[in-house]
Length: 335
Image (cartoon, rainbow, N blue to C red; front, side, top):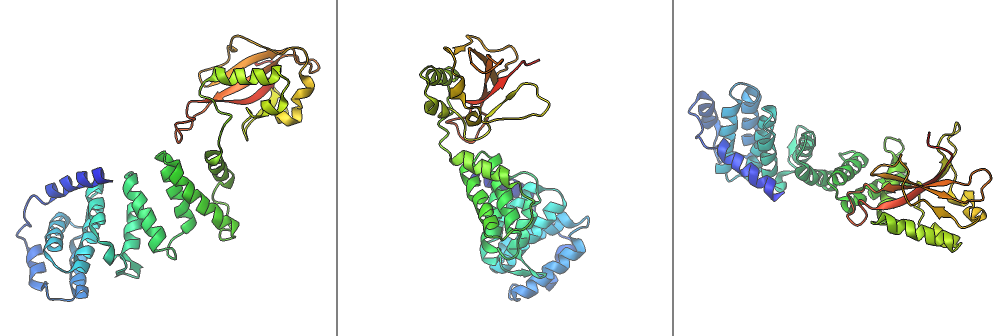
C-alpha cells in the first residue's frame, strides 16, 4: 500500500508540474469564488464548473484548477469534495493511477457528505471497485464500504468479493474471515438466494482450518507409512493417511462412474497375503499424479490395486504446498 501511494505521489507531482493555465475557465471560477463562502456554495460552484467542463476538451485545465483550489483552501469539506471531482475527471481520462491517488486524498471526515442523495464515501468506494487491478487499494475501500455503509451495500456480495480478493492474493487467513461472515449470514437466514457456491466456500474454510496431517512433503515417506500400516494389518493407522474428503475407490473405466469410500471397501477384509508395492510408478503417471501398483489383494478377480497420489497445489500454505496426499485406489486397467 505504501509503495502504491509513493508511485501515485510521483505521478501527482508530474500532473501538477505546471501552473494553472490563464484561461477563461480559471477567470470564471475566480470571479465567483471567495474563501469566505459556505462549503455548500463552494461545492455548488465546483459542480457548476464540473458540469460544463468535466467532459470537455478543457477537463485537464479543470483538474489543474481544482487541484490548486483543493490545496490552497482551508475548508476541509470543500477540499475533500474537490479531490472527489478530480478523481472523477481522471477516471474519465482513464488515468487510473491519478484517479486512485485523489480518491485516497479525500479525508474520511467528509465521507458522509451528501452527494445527490448518496454519501461521498459510498460513491468513492463504488468507483474504486469498478477499476481493474490495484488490489491493495480495493481492500481498503471494501472494508470502508462494509464498516461505514452496511445499510447501503449488498453486504453478502462484498464479503464474497473481498474474500476472493484476499484468496487471489494468497492471504487465505484473511479471506477466511469474510467467507465465514458470509456463511453466518446464510445460517441466520439473511440470504435466500443461491448465487454463491456454498459447498465450495465451506470446503475452502474446512480445508484451511483442518490440520491436514495426512499430507507429506516427501512422497516416499507417505508411501512407507501406508506400507507399514498395511503390513501390520492396522486399519485405524491406515485411515490416518486418508484425506478428510476427496478420496475415492473406483475403476479406471466404468460406465456408471461409481465411487466408494475406503470404509465402504472394507479394506481389512482383503489383506490377503503380504501386499506388495511396485518399486516403480506406472507409466501413465505424471509430475503431479502418481500411480503405484499394489498386488496380492484377496479381492475376487481383482488382485492388483493401483494407489493414486496427488501433489498438493495450495499456495496459501507453504507448509503443505507441493506436498503429497493419498487420493484413491483404482481397479482394472488404465487403457
